[in-house]
Image (tube, rainbow, N blue to C red; front, top):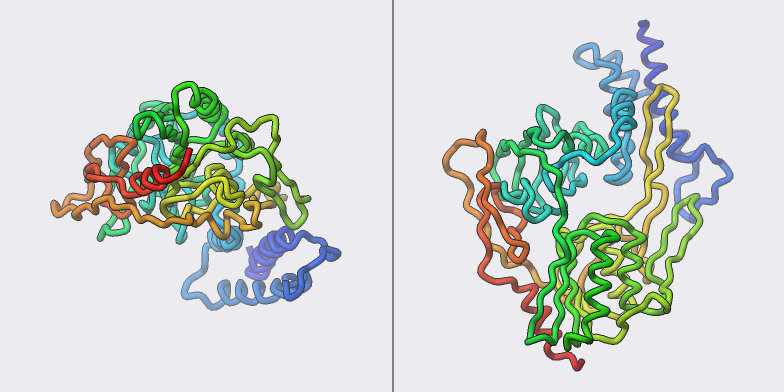
Length: 424
């Protein structure tokens, strides 16, 4: 293929994505100081010149498809972690995937270019192997996660029950990646954990996922709490990073009867307001404290943000992960696709979870013990299966596979202390 034609193909590919990015819509209204669509179009000439230099002046003849794919992937991922470019081959695999496959029990996103563990399902293979929120997945099999879209990373984590998943994982305090092999299983999220403190005066509830089943369990406990003498509620949303936004609104509505719970809005996505329904509220007066941490993400952030902004609850713990957007898939002429975030969720005060996350009013750092680095020099063996309990998850920054429970839970203790001082 002539060089001029290759350059043209590259320029057209990038121009196509730029046109989709700016909406191919010159009548869009831009906020004061925001770039106009024409500004974006002008950048096409810059891209074209860069591509021409790559083609003619790079040290060796470049791999044109690889260069194009890298440029398009970088363009989408510069927007947010959930926006992705899928090559024609990737998109074919993506469309053929119908879900329901076995996994190892982790929720992932992308941070700093790599796949990052947001949370780990208690009792799952990942939990037993010592993976914790904040761990970086450098590679899945032979694939470097820097070169993979989030959509493809999530697909690679899935597989048939009993199949093996090979990963290279880096903890924040690890000197080098640790290779591990985990068996995929049909992960079942545990039921809502329920406990009583201060006799029966404080009802403690911990869901691991915000879905219909778990919200229904919480609703049942809240309805029954007066029968059992409970007068205060401690809702533990730490490491709750999966679920459904509709159920997040429903869960929040159990504790508030008026006002905005969340909003959803985008450049071309009409603003939606999710409001409390008085008929669905169950307990709007009992003292309520909510625990959050870095593994609190998505639907759980909607709950935490609404309860905090409305003044219904006090939040204790650490800043949440920062996730909350709606995606739409756009087919491309060459058979590929882009997955683009088209709207973002925001709390009643207007803070977008994707950008601002949720910061608790009472910040309490985790006191989980850090692990010693593995001095054995062997980073090829699978991580040992060391079980943990939901009460004492291991903190981010630990070497995978070397997990021991912490002696205390300062975040939980602080929340309990706060509730003890509140009049029922």
